[in-house]
Length: 184
Image (cartoon, rainbow, N blue to C red; front, side):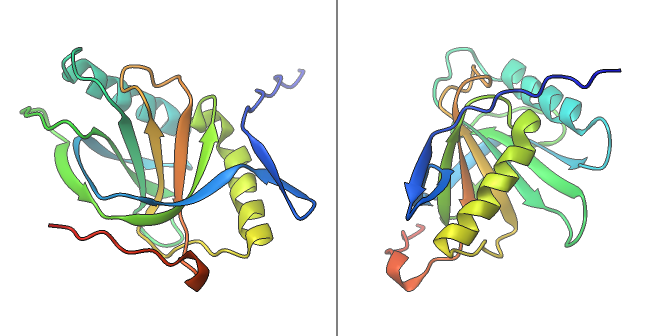
């Protein structure tokens, strides 16, 4: 049986001292309060992609169509050396619902490498992992020991098939010094 044709991953690239890497920006993901749905997935299970898509669509059906703005998908490591992750799909708009698994949570400020991709992260995840490892090697950055592994931000909550940014927490080097925002 022939292998399926791999999807084409579209992302900007840049040249750093002769090495090609996925385009990135070092930035602070500002603190934000998110309301949405929380659940756990096991990347070793065959249905994890369907579960993430189903819960994301559940959130879209719950919120009012007049709500505009971004959608955040926060991936948190449940346990060290585990394939289980907590996933939070939310919006900065506060809403109330009696449905189970809905939450409001404050995401702390994070120093991150920000990447822009087109296409479904669940289908291009291996490409991002390779890009991120290459980024760490070439830039001599280190992944942060944050419990948050990734934050995926879509510009339009009602179009989760559009371009998005991935924020991957990295350790701040002295040259990257920034004034941490005050959380009040």
